Image 1 (cartoon, each protein chain N blue to C red):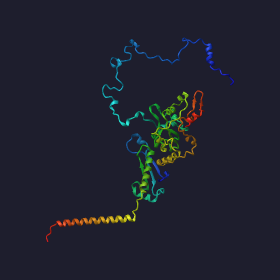
Image 2: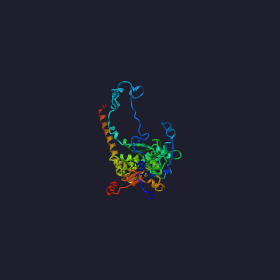
Image 3: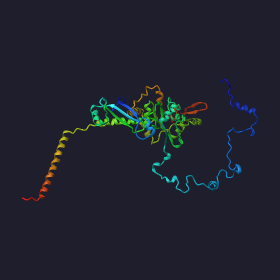
Image 4: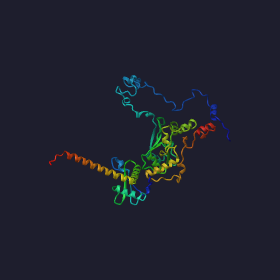
Length: 138
Length: 296
């Protein structure tokens, strides 16, 4: 499990949105976490690129990935939610699909060709039926 | 001993000098006897004697408690349901918010330089616990976690995860401990117990349902493994994104790491001891059987 250093992240708090009267107007409960994604050497290079491609909408012009959370009434809980979101993003980007082996590729090719042959055969049978029903003047 | 003890000296002198005691010489202390309220002796001969005018009220025939004049009473309208079963026997935990704890520390009602226990909380009038009403102690609630900034060694009966994180973030230590109802009433009112002259009983272990709670290091249970507690502290710090302050390098390290033995009720007093408040002495048992019983 990736151990990331909180020092590398910039954490700010601001006021949340939504109803709540005086409390929501005055208390800083929304947590925002930013870090520069290109220089984040605690994430492997390929995962970094994957994150950039998947979450371009969260990266601002200066290249910082921004994650916010205003789920709960407590700063601490919102901060932990942000960190969990970052962990989930990294986990989703680190997923490596299995490369199909030689035999799997060959099997897939064989199956696709067989499907196409079957389909064309069915079409020919159908044309024969339709032709036999036609009345031709010859 | 320079002065020979004169046992009962003052009393004997009085007996010798004062006149014979009789009913004419005796009188109760002022305020000891309060005259009872007697009905039917007021102006105009007492007339209705505080009972009102005619009807069931005056004639003493009012219906039972809960009767609503024939309408189906409230306590019968509400249907019984499974989730309410045994509600009067369920253990209750008085909530203590971090807001309130900070307030008490700031006002000086609770001393953060000493380990904080339920006794300290009750002495500082922070919480009111009623052991006879199925209260099993105090639970720490995370209201005020964002503005909490006190380093304390606190022992409660239940605590939520965010509250544990808030306390450890500020360099404190939190433990959850179980007190059976008798031990809890001793903890809340120690002085009346000491006046009784009974030996301090040993704290009972939790019942089947609560053992998993108190053996779990995530809840900082008093029966859990200390190594796992340290690991849980690190994990919580990672989850909530703060740097865990090192307790070993603290000046108050000795105070912060004081913990009670699972069978101990009071700090500094072991089960089996008798406390004499009048002469300010502690009596410890010497018999082997008693010692083996109390140390088991």
